[in-house]
Image 1 (tube, rainbow, N blue to C red):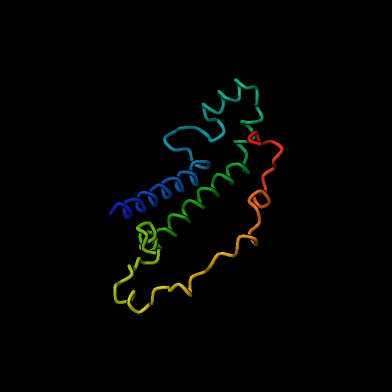
Image 2: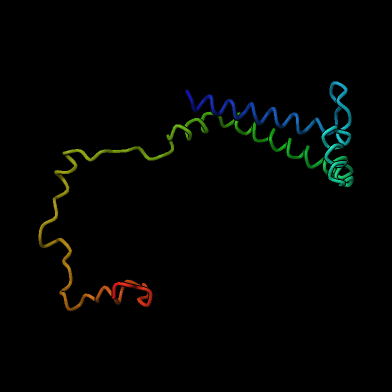
Length: 144
């Protein structure tokens, strides 16, 4: 149930962000003013002295980029709507291979290893010393 709610809330978030990011740069709802004449944008531009910032945000290029991000959000929302069940299954972990415990019947079929089939260690003279194989520089050791 939690995975279903997670996917539903994700879809709603993507839809909401997509609609607002697509429409707000071009539309002036409730008399809020133009995208480039935003109160906070004007205040930041005046306080920092970056009047170019206000002109850049008001340009059609930035408006188009913001609308493009909104369209991507809408596309993600619709993709999640069409693949809802698959996403829920993946969140629940259904795509992982199922755990199959080893049963007694299967253990009886596979024989246990015997002493002659176990790997053996090589004789002591063939084993290189630990000093030669540890790849640690020995000039910094204090135990010598």
